[in-house]
Image (cartoon, rainbow, N blue to C red; front, side, top):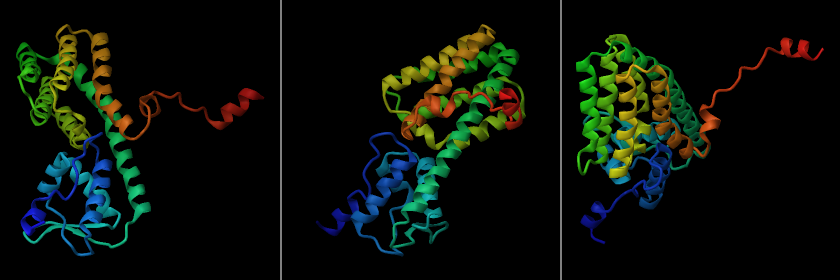
Length: 264
């Protein structure tokens, strides 16, 4: 293999299964071992890594953050920056611990989304004007564009949520929604580039819009639950758990004194 062929060869394999930061970590480690890198060696830049892995930059940054916290990589910013191997030893335990921390962070964001986005959707249903509903409708119909790719699907989905947030006519709620979606950016790689996926997202958004247009709170609650399941189911599958394990409501435990009194 010539030097040019070596440069063109992929450093990592594309993430073909569930496209999560954890799978990206496994592929980056495999790339390091395959390339026989040593401490101080430079990995491909962020753009090349994201492209080769087939994931978004937010998901890649999440993977790099775990590997940097674990002591395997050093990520430098600026003109002389880059991604460098920091250790010749694979810190397996530290990586596992930091992966668990990242997964808890995503779980918290998904739970926060249920609370906040439900409140915003109900406020938008109450406050939305005809123009607001028409703008939401426009974002829903963008999903029907023939040949829509994953990047366009993500943009159309985000446009929908931003339009619903604006329809609440409450800037604080709108800003809070943006914060939640920044935390959710990595897991949104769960969207697949296919007409079937676009049709599913279209059906989810249409159901929510129809409930808001009808000013029907019960129908909106059902539509929102269906909507939230979209990412929650994918996240649960990615971490090898069931939806009920992670998101089902649990009855609060009674204080120990109350339990003792009950059996006395």
